[in-house]
Amino acid sequence: MIKILWVDDEIEHFKSHILFLNKKGYDIDMCKSGPESLNLLQENTYEAILIDQNMPGLSGTESINIINENYPLIPIIMISQNSDDKTIENAIGLRVNDYLIKPLNPNQILLSLTKIFRNKELVANKVISNYQNNYQEINDKINYCNSYEDWIEIYKVLIYWELQLGDIQEKEVSEILYSQKKQANKLFADFIETNYQRLIENKDFLSSINLFKNKILPEITSNTPTLMILIDNLRYDQWKSIEPYVVENCKISTDILYSSILPTTTQYARNSIFSGLSPLELKKTHNNYWVSEVDEGGKNKYEDELLKNQLLKLESKIKYKYFKVTSSKDGNLFYDRLNNEKSNDLTVLVYNFVDMISHAKKDVKFIKELASTDQAYRELTKSWYKNSKLNDIINKAKDLGFKIVITSDHGTINVNKPALISGDKEISNNLRYKTARQVHSKKKEVINLDNPSNYLLPSNHLSSCYIFAKENTYFVYSNNYNNYVNMFKNTYQHGGVSLEEMIVPFIVINPK
Image 1 (cartoon, rainbow, N blue to C red):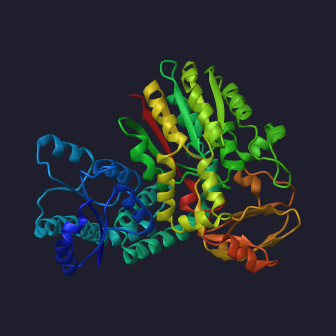
Image 2: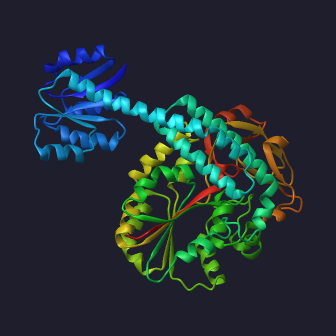
Image 3: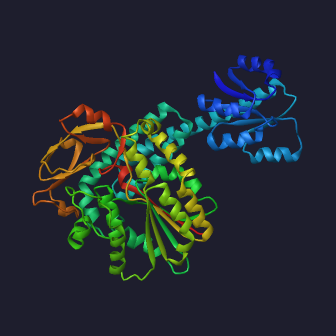
């Protein structure tokens, strides 16, 4: 049965209506006030809400505002004794799905509910039909991708359908799409294994190394202050989830995807963005800023200094400031001082909260349960963004006339396939890539780079090599194997080779 919540301070008057709806397949929970309805919403899942406009205490209108804020996907039918234009306009402003006038006829309610659920069914059927019609074409594109641009385009298509099917929550069809995405990641890894050296040596290939020079610097002018926001660990599908809230009342002038370098981690990819150098060049040129895999301490402590050196190298005289937000306190401080940064040509803000979510997922059972799937992870990101200080910062930046650049350094992938790994005692810790003098794992599960310098990667020893996990694999040791398998299974990791980790959003939003 379809579960409905009916909220009315005179609900006892509608017992015959409820019996009628029960016979039509609707299971009705009843309550008499707004606060009571909010408690029931926390405890149960409802597919629609009937609510009276005029109730003592917390009114129906006030209750609807709270419900819309916390449960925006539940359809609402407002019931009222008023039929004047102003009341109806107010109801439309509350984003209710229908508006019924008392006295109520049970068939009125049935028609309204039928319209809501019939529309949902029609939308779902249309989406599924469209996906079915495109299924073979998607398969063909996956099997015949010949360039990185082809992979970017197919990734866009896969994410488009993932978002469409996620909204209607058709499990069987979503599983078919998941299998297509899995096949895409398998072939993408093969493509990277064959072509990565050629790509990374190509000066025109847009990657972490030349992103600042080729895309960010040309956006900076003395006429308009630019706010560059690097949201650590932000995947393309997460960006598409929060995009409607970010770009509201603004215009996107650039919306592209670029490639993170390998390994897809902060130490390598983000340091390359700020330095404009490959990891190999960075270690050679600024060895004092490079922290090797075996050294203790943060791997990205010198981003401000690296950016300063890149601007000097590019002979750019722009005035800039660098900030990093790793806590709500940092976010509040930056928000308060944003107006002062209008005098800069460029204000750089590194925002680490998405990274905190993804890494906390392996440690906090509650978060792991909240983000058990990519769909749930997107919803968690959306919920976080809507209530985050970053949302406030971006809205304030719009009002202050900043041009806003939004990007990331790499994405993440949900891992669930453990792979045994072994190596010398100085082997690196990351779950998606390893570097050491000796590293051993099954060849079919990894991309092996025996000559790191050919791929613009540094070596800790003359015989060092790198291996990268393909698809949704993660590395574990034979020692305490079961413990680590269970700890990291179904968590979000990065460092390896996948569409989710390597293909990264780059967005430019013009000021109002």
